[in-house]
Image (cartoon, rainbow, N blue to C red; front, side, top):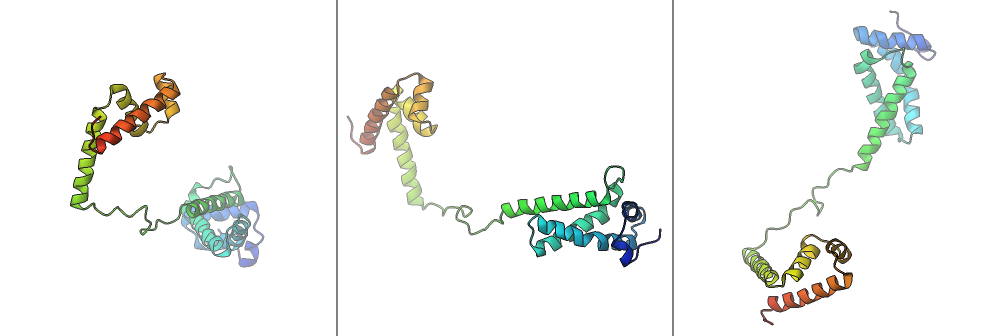
Length: 194
């Protein structure tokens, strides 16, 4: 295969473009790749800039597109698409990938959401365990209907209207039972008996 000169590369027709890709696929023809690069790289870069990439990103993505052509030349089928269509599809996909990367920022290791909580001091941990045990005992001391509502509202995070709908208890009754339950729990937590 004779390779195109720089002047010829700017005016390659469809068949010549396909022949260059086939030469790359068949024998890793560097001259064919260079001709294809000269012809398409500026056009691909311009296309990527039109898609919103800045010049630096467009240059980087163009390099990736042309590298993909080098690596995947054997997958090109001139019966399915022209070389231009194939290249610009690769370019569009690379731009989409770049946009997705932009929307997923790098993780900041100092982000408070990623920093684990300081370990609880031993005496604070004991206080918390004691408090949890008192709450559990206080809930067990409630009448069953009130204890069930407290469980639904706080352990299962259901709204009062959800509880009323699921239990078929009027909303006002749900609210009054929870109010009574909280009054009893408060007294039990303060160490007072009814």
